Structure formats: structure tokens, C-alpha cells
Length: 325
Image (cartoon, rainbow, N blue to C red):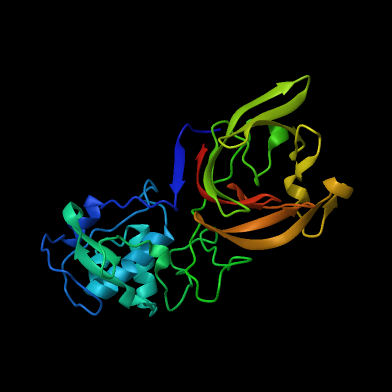
């Protein structure tokens, strides 16, 4: 790995922070007057971020928040002053193309305690989740979005027409700790960490933390450990990019074999690769490839890892992840 820096992506449980440099640039107001739908007030509202996403990352939640703030408070020109910020640039570009908030009556601008101006759900003090904002168009502005950020496909199972779509933050390609483990659909790098919301058949929900805790070689073979807060530690073997469990059953084909319709094994251990699809989780919408067995399906995104899984007894969806690089 080329650097010890980490990128922490948390697009599900949103901690709202005012970005002071944006507030000052936008001329923040301390007036306590509430602004509701249709208001033309120019009192400033802090720009929010799904922390700790770096300021330089494009976040669909923030973009949609900015569009609501602009429409409620007639504030788009304030965001033009900070056009060097990717989220402001994306929001301004969409605004200029005529994109507006359809469900604007669901929100209002007001001062919330000591947090200052915020966009909240109408009649409450709860700061909004940007992904609850419905836009007149879900097209990402070509002027500011890269192909990797333009992940706008619908969820394979649950997204309905017009459903707000998250942009999964693009992550650079990773080099596995062991060449035998190189597979972009599962970054095998010590310290990689994923969090999931797990729901069992009874509807009970729990949180699972998963991490790559160790990568090593023994007698010329490559192994790694995955430690789960719910299921303990499991050992896997890597063979030319393919991943096998401790019973020598294929878990994930090599990257070059992730082709729609390709089959591996037979009987209860048979795996079939599904075609590319978009999979929605609390962390966003990801372009994925499915790997399905007799009683399970798992969906993986390149340079991220497992996004969702449906097993016989439970299902789980990614909420956030940490990838060292």
C-alpha cells in the first residue's frame, strides 16, 4: 500500500456539522426567525456534511441538502460563492439545469438550538437526511461528476421510480496485502473494516462490524482472517484472486471470472454469477455483481467489497466502511 492514510465513509448514520469556512463565505446569520417553504429569506444556513466524509468528496446527501436550502431560502447565489467546493458546484450546476425539490413542503429552515440555521423536517427540529429529498431529476451534473461518481441506477429490488439516489463515493483501486488475494470485489487489506445492518427472519435488527484482521502465508499458501462482531473469526484462502472458505468452498470467484452467467462447482456448493446491477444500501447505491448459491446471494462492488447479502436466516446491508490505503 502506498500510504497510511485512511478514508472513512459514513453515509448512513449522519452526524451534522456546520462547515465554518462555508458558513463564513455564505454570510451566516444568527437571526432566530423560522423559514418555511416558499420563504425568500436570505438568512444563512450551515452547509451540512455526512461526517467524516472529507470536504473534497462529492456526497449526494449534501448536494440535495443544498438544493433544499437554496429553494427554501432563495440562497443559490450564496453557494455560487463557494463553487470551488464539489458539493456546492454540483448543486449549483443542477440548479442551473432546472432541477428543483419536488417535496419541498416536507422541509423548513430554522435555527435549531445552538447549531444555528439548518434545514429540518417541517414542524420538527430534526435535521433532514438529504436522501429524503425528491428531485425533479436524478441526473448527476456532467460538469462536476466523474463516471465513477455517476452511479444512478435503481436498486434491484426496492427502488421505485423517482426514489432519491445516493452517490457512492468513488474509492481508488487497492493493492491487496498478498498478490494471491488481489480481487477488487473484496479489498483484502489488513485493517479494512465494514459495518452492516443485519435483519433476521423475525425482523430483529442488529449491527455487525467486519474487518480483515490478518493476512499471512503458510507453506506457500495465502490466507486471511475476517473477524465479525456477530460470527467471530473465519479463515479464508486466496488462490489467484479467488477466495475459498476453510472448507475449500469457493466464496468469491477471481475478478476476471465475475462474468454474468458463469457457474462454479455443483450441487449445494454451486455458485452462479449474476449480471451487473445497482444495489441500494444505507451507504448509497453501488454498481454490483451478484454471486449466488443454493441458499444465498451476495452483491459486491469493486474497490468497496460486500454491499448486501441474503442468507437463509438473515439479510444484511452495508452502512459504512473504512479502507486503509
